[in-house]
Image 1 (cartoon, rainbow, N blue to C red):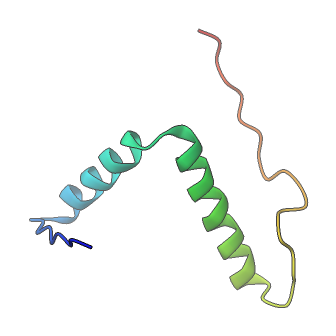
Image 2 (image 1 turned 180 degrees about the vertical axis):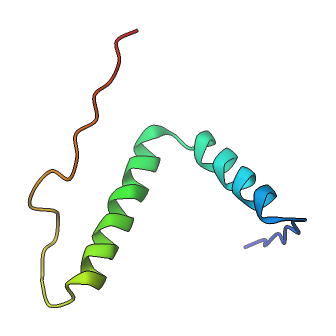
Image 3 (image 1 turned 90 degrees about the vertical axis):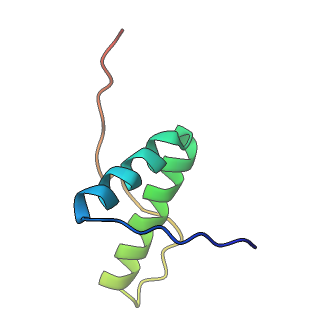
Length: 66
């Protein structure tokens, strides 16, 4: 596996690069990442709970019609 080291001049450059990376990812991949992060945070908050998925909807997003 080839590794690349990126040097940034400031925090703003890091955030801009991270934003560009996630904007380039397909929507299903971004949603999967959000789901994994959410489940990880719930596991840290309640480590004894053995819940393989969320039991309720966290939020509902309304899409505007084009």
